[in-house]
Amino acid sequence: MGMHKKQILGKILLLICLTIVALVYIYPVFLMFMNSIKPFGEVVADAIALPKAPTFENVTYVVDKIKYGSLFLNNVEITLIGIAGIVAFASIAAYILDRNRGKLSSAIYTLIITPMLIPFQTIMITLLKAMNVIHLDQSKIGLGIQYWGFGIPMACFIFYNFMKTIPREIDESAHIDGASTFRTFVSVIFPLLKPVTVTVIVLDVMWIWNDFLLPLLMVNSSNKTKTLVLAAYTFVGQMNTKWQYAMCAMSLTVIPSIIAFIFLQKYIVEGVVAGAIKG
Amino acid sequence: MAIIDKGMKKISPSKVFKEKLLKKKKLSGKKNLETILFCLPAILLICIVMYIPFLMSGYYSLTQWNGIAKNPVFIGFSNFADIFSGKSGFLTSLGFTVRYTLLFVIGSNILALALAVALTRKFRLANLYRGIFFIPYIMSMTIVGFIWKFIFTQGLDKIYELIPAGFLKWSWLGDPKIAFFSVVLVGVWQGLGFYIVLYIAGLQAVPSDVLEAATVDGATGSQRFFKVVLPLLGPSFTTCIFMSLTNGLKVFDIILALTKGGPGTATYSTTMQIYQEAFTNNNYGMGSAQAILYFIVVMVITQLTLKAMGSKEVAL
Image (cartoon, rainbow over all chains, first blue to last red; front, side, top):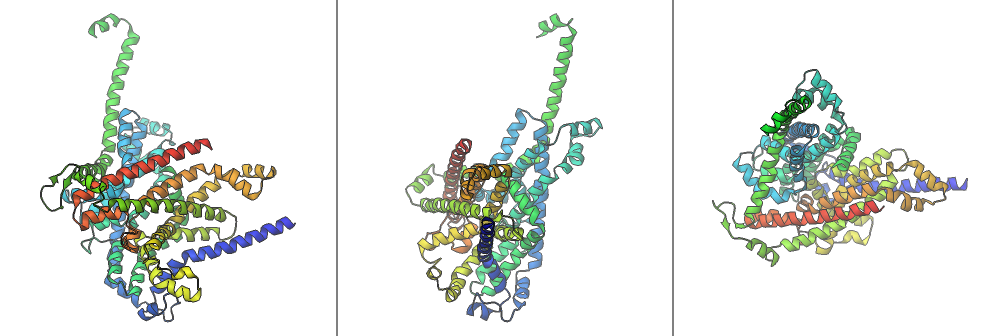
C-alpha cells in the first residue's frame, strides 16, 4: 500500500514538473500572439504584460500592408504544385523500379536517391544560374517545379520501401485483365500506396510551406511571387522597432500551420515519425 | 554459332529454350524501356536541380567570377589555397558550425529522450502535452529566430523584474560567448518536438513483457531504464543522432533571423558564409569553392558517424 501511494505521489510530482516545463516551453509562442494584439505603447512599456486594451488594428494593418490574402494563395499554389509533382513522379518511378528489378533499375535507383546527401547550400549558387538559363526562376510555377527535383529523392525512397510490401500477384491479375503497366499503376497500385502517400504529403507540405532559402533565391523580387515567410522576413526587418506589427505578421504566418496541426496532429506526427524512420 | 545451331537442330527442347531466351530478351528490352520511360521525369528533374548545379559548382570553384562577367576566369585551385590559408572566413565559420552541431546534437537528444520518457507515462491530456512540444517544429525557423530575438531583447528584462534570476540579465545576443549558447538554445527549442516524437515511437516499441520480466527479476526503475530500455532504443538513437547531425550542420534560417552571425563572427555558420560570399560579396567562384568543401566536410562527418553508430548498434 505504501508503495502504491509513493507511486501516485511520484506521478503527481512528474505531472507538475511536466506542466511547468510545457508552459515555459510554449511561452515564447504565447508571447508572440499576445504582443500581436497590443498597441505600440503597451509593447514598449511591458512586453510580457497581458494586453490591457487588445486591438485588432495591428491585424488589419499588417493584412493590408503585406497583402496577406494573396501571399497566402501564393503559398498554397507553390505547395500544391510541389506536392502534386513530387507524389506523381516519385511514386511511379518507385513502382517501376521495384517491379522491373535488374541492373538498370538499381543504377537508376541509386541515381535518384543519392542527391539526398547533397546539402542545399552546396548547389544554391549555381542553381540560381541554372534556373535563370531555363527560366524557372522568378515564377511560382518554376519554384514549384524545382521542388519536384528536390523532393523526389526522399519521396522515391519512401515509396520504394513501401512498394516491396505490395504483392506482385496484384499487378499480374491486372495484367491478365488486359491493363497496361501505366494503367495498372494508376488504378490499382497507386490507391494502395495511400499510407505512404500521406507520409510524403505531410513531410513535404511542412517543408515547402515553411521553406525560406530557396524562395529567397528564386521568388523574392516581386510581391506577386513572394511567399508568406519571405514577406514576414522582409516586413519584420523593416519594423525593427514596431514590434507590435512584427509580432502580428509573424503570428499570421504561423497561424495556418498551427491550425492545421491542431486538426491533423495524429496524421502529422505519424507522418513525421514514419518519414524519419524510413528516410 | 550457326554450326552449333545446325548440330542441335534435332533436339527440340533446345529450340524451345532458345525461343524462350529470345522472348525473354525482347521482354527485358521492353522492360528496360518501360523502366527508363517511367523514371524519366524523376531523373530529368533531379539532374536539372541537383546534378547539373553540383557539377557547375565543381567547375566554378576553380574560377574567379563575380556573377556578372560573361566568362569566369580559370584560376585552378587558388580559391582552395586561399581558404586553407585563412584568407576567407570559411575556417572560422566551420569551427562555429562544428561546435554548434555538437552541442545541438547532445542537447536535443538528451532533452528529447528525457521528455519522451515523461510523456510516455499514462496520464490524461498526454496528447496535449506532446502537441505543445511539437508546435515550434511546425513553425518557420525564420519566425522562430525573430520570436527569440524579441524575447532576448525585450522580454527577459521584464521577466527579470518578476523573477530576479541573474541569468535573465545576461547579454544574450550581445556577448559573443553567450550568443553562441543562445543560438544553440533556440535551435534546440525549435527542433526538440521532432526528436521527442521519434523517441516516443521507440519507447512504445519496447515490448511490455520484457519490462515485466525485468520487474519480476527485481530490477529497480532506473535499472530497468538503463539496462533494458536504453539498449533496445538503438535504432531510435541512430535515427535521432543522424537527423540532428544533418540538421545541425545545415543551420541557417534561425541564425539569419536571430543574430545575422554576430556579434562579430561569433555565430557565423558555414551556410551563412557561403551565402554571403556569393550573394553579398559577389565572389561566386570563391563561394562555390566553399560550397564544395562544405559538401566534403558534411559527407565525411555524416558517414563517419553512421559507421560508428552502425558498429555500436550491432554490439548492443
